[in-house]
Image (cartoon, rainbow, N blue to C red; front, side):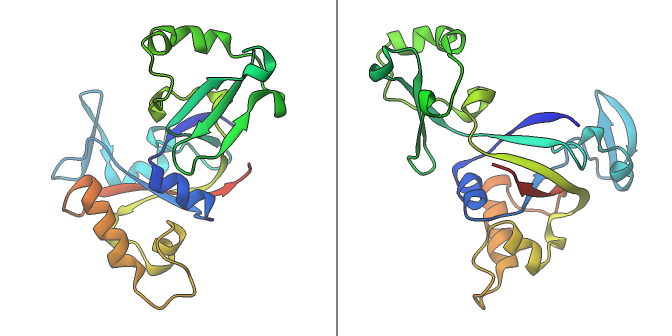
Length: 199
């Protein structure tokens, strides 16, 4: 079992917090002949990827993902500045370090010293820079597969966090519009992951 960070935008974070159980990410390096280039070499046909999940951004079933999201850290004055109050951009939720038994984070804070010294304490840190200790969401990978993005079902669009399962409007078109707004038009191959939230 491996653990890896999963960079998420605000919409994805809110979907997970609301109960989403699936995520999709583009398969990189796919040519028009559906063959995959990996580090400059053709390694397999896209349909063979499910036999080679080591290239998946989600890992394999049984792996754990910790969500990396946009956040902000402020020294907690009540602890003499030893711990940090972590604030998450997606919904403004706070986690105080001393309340969750968090280890002291001076090494990470030191790495961002220039950021803080520039008077940017009110700014949020991009998700790519979130350290493991600051993550509030952990997911267990249940299933990983490959498909064309437009092959998503209504059920899977709901699992992606589109709409509510009890509403009657079509989720698939809404999901595809959202996908297109992020990645552009087309019908690319995507990695699909079904997960279960642990924390």
